[in-house]
Image 1 (cartoon, helix red, strand yellow):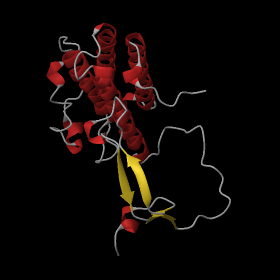
Image 2 (cartoon, one colour):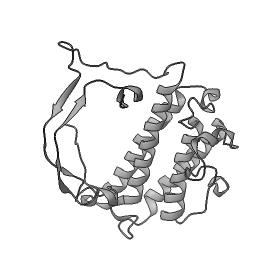
Image 3 (cartoon, one colour):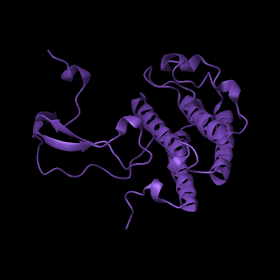
Length: 231
């Protein structure tokens, strides 16, 4: 049976290190799959003004991993401090990123691999639960979630390309028994928002609290911006 949730705060030191390495590896598998799906020329192209070139996302993932885990947590020398500003998402709007002197796909893959080798050394050697960043592997969890967020961004980039996505899903939508209504009513009620137990949750996700939601209608199929806008 697959375990749905594992609490890092309740793990032994060895188990926590293994868990961190496993989560880092699973996120990286998705990133590599999303970038290996196309050739190098495609990686440097901007498929939509709303998105970055895929090669920017890939190197940005490693740059944030380097800053947080190699330098801040591990206290190690920088791998490529000279590219920090280029891969700073706050300083470079997506529309400007294609004009930057970005790492080539080959350089990005090398940088990504070098940073991950350093990070795995940090995972194996750095004392855990000694600071706020290392308590229950918090900083490692934030880096995992950051990579997962960019995996979603890269997936959206693939879906926005004019030529169609190069990715194929292994499953399709479930069969329908009949036509869907245009919208359905979601009844009012209370639910628990946030968490008081998830060790890798952000500050703005804590603590768990009850929220009352009024009834609302939800469309059953995707709508365009034009359809959603008032007439």
